[in-house]
Image (tube, rainbow, N blue to C red; front, side, top):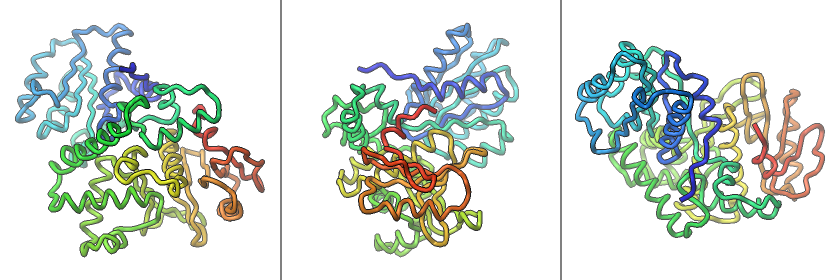
Length: 396
């Protein structure tokens, strides 16, 4: 088995808030590496001199940590406290009913530094937020970037081999447990099983789902239509469902479980978010391949999905642009750092359209067209043309 790679960026963020008066909340889709990250951070603080006796780790998916209520969980932790500062790590803590009451009491009443993980945005519900009064620090862990995928599945560094690795990346996916030495059938069964487990364990228990079949149909439809502007009413029509409010509710549940990412539209000229319509992307291209297959005709949309995820990893807030009713792909904002991106598999026959979308934007922020074309030009009117491998391999 390959040794887990260090999730350096996430470890740096955890290190930056160590010993602060916040509960560190590590969330992300199931099996994206949250537990491994937590254990890597435990190893890090051990190396810095924190005693093993002052580290408390509990995985709530194990039977020995199957507590019927938060009081028994709380009392178990209390027995481990001895007046010294403790570092408490609670893995998949949302399994314990009303766990947030115990966590808040530990934070408020004892000398401890608390870290928790969970596979559902429910973890950050309004109840938790109100109990902790803003005393949380949130770290959203994503599946592997392309660079991380290459650490697990090394390339010889040549451009043709990097292209081949990218093809594996979108076919097999970015989940840490998937490696290129696995048979494609095993990969597909593993990822379909993961999707099923997310729905069964992370969505169904925390919602009043009336129709699991409808939820699965919506997920399949959304994976098949990544990057298309849509809304619950149009989805309901396409699927022959009469209740668009139910579709909206199910979309929200799929987002909370981190299977889907919604990207709102932003009116560039009017400088405001638009309330209607959005684009949706999947959290892992391999899940999409497992669920609906891989078709060359959709490689441009898949690349768009990969670029979106990479921008989120880099810390940008991402919207899709709208200027004079014309669609742009991405507006990426991180503080005063604002960038515009168009994504296309090839500029052959589409150059005017792709560059034209960015030319309509009259400010001076960086603008880039990302393409799979090997021979990129110098761009047009200050708009950069960039090969997708170069973009994905950038240091940040």
